[in-house]
Image (cartoon, rainbow, N blue to C red; front, side):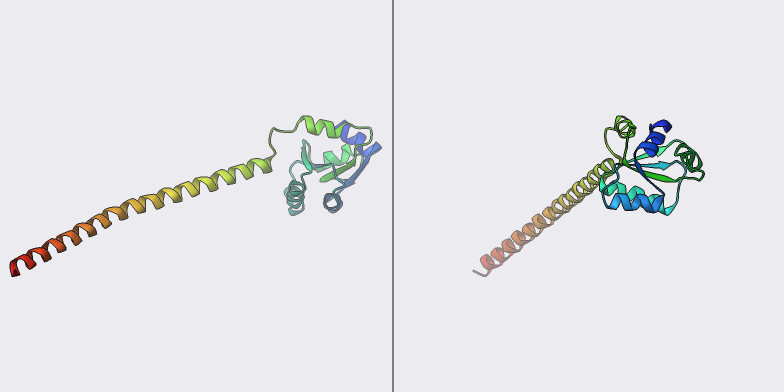
Length: 162
């Protein structure tokens, strides 16, 4: 978890972008190194930031407090829902974020789950197709038996007429 003093030091000695619009701009131009979101934010802008940062491969951390708490940590007299660290300055906010990184990002885990699900569906489809082929084979055998019976009858009729 990112410590509040790391965030404050990044704000004071480094370069950060505050607010959803500025954060999205920094993500799009690849200048953001870390995005911090205050907990409890459910706006569309926050969802957009989560999506864009995931695509861009930029680390996303959730701050333990709400947006008023994040604003206070940044030393601002207003709420801050999200911030992007462009230059950490003298803080070790990037190191703290990396140390708390899970083994796999959520996006990679989701991709693996989707891939596994697709493979399972493909296997089920193959099994269903094999089952249909097996059902068709006895019908072919029945058709072959019927053909043999017809040929036997034709031979008997030919023998009788001779």
